[in-house]
Length: 444
Image 1: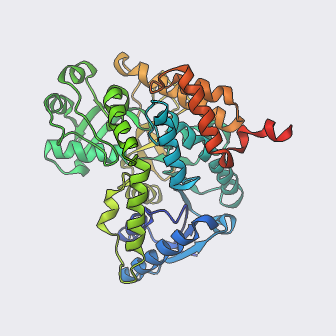
Image 2: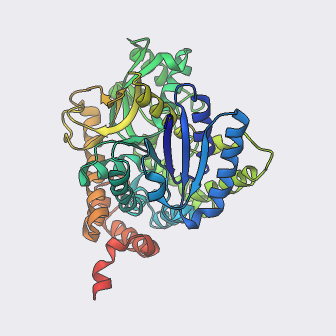
Image 3: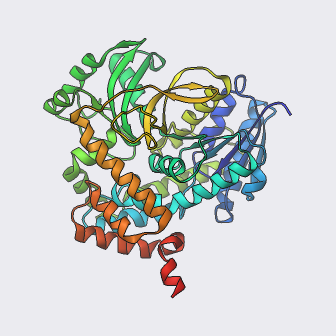
């Protein structure tokens, strides 16, 4: 049959309307014949709601794209061309526990960083590895596009613990950085490209180009005196501008998530205030999602509502559509994704995942080499990669000691005592979703 079959696992996500909008506006280049939205029974209400909106959006566009809702992942995956994953194991209640329990021990609780990011990985990696098994059996030629967080660690786990190579991790942070640099340089975003060095949510823009010409020195000068309002930021946390001295010394631009590592005290103070007021990020997002799904239920709504931009992951889905379109059409444009290192960064393991500028071809992303990391950024990137590798191993093996060691390796961990307490409390809180850590107990 002509046309493309795309399967979205986690189809009941609030981001799905952005994904559908992306496929609609690219239909002339990316003829999607079937879009399967897959979820679990626990997410039935959300999938039915967002699926109905997706069907209205396609109907309004007048396209021959069939939207199919399914609770049978294997049925959906059969002969798929592309698989996107946007799952949240334990739903937002699990995220809230991650954040609140971590903060209760005086540590930053953020969904992709530190203890909270580690436990999201623990819950998610085994599920993703099961999905990969099904893909290998039912649609082995499909590309898997993952934008489930923590995207870097999930890509690392797939590359390290399976022989499946057609996995690409995706994040909206590089897209926001490109748009931010374009705004600061007063040029169109499509003219801007970056050299990226680092890992998911731990990247540095080590060069910035407009029409292929480096504008790094100009960006550095702007960033030395930038206001909080003009700095590149994310919607899901407050961003502080880095000092001129730090920017000059780094000679590159950190991504917004580096605020957690370079403004740890300030971020912890802000998060502690939110914790006391009952508005940790997961609680805020839960309220935003409730409002979004009320909008989605409107039978007259047939477009993506603007309120979706309030979610911190805005542009994730659009980036996914862009990536699939480029893979399908062998466009050779530059995008920023998580892939196997393969010497892209020479002082990181070849078999680890890195986030890099890549040329997108029909044969997959081809990362653009950056060589050896300079000393200013090498240490922090090596530390986070060590953390990621230990987290992945603990997620697969259920080794509690390794979980404590991994957290101790993370700069956001305040002490070994706190690491033990957080791991103990979060394991108990998420016992239902972490059977790998309780096997011995079950055998006794």
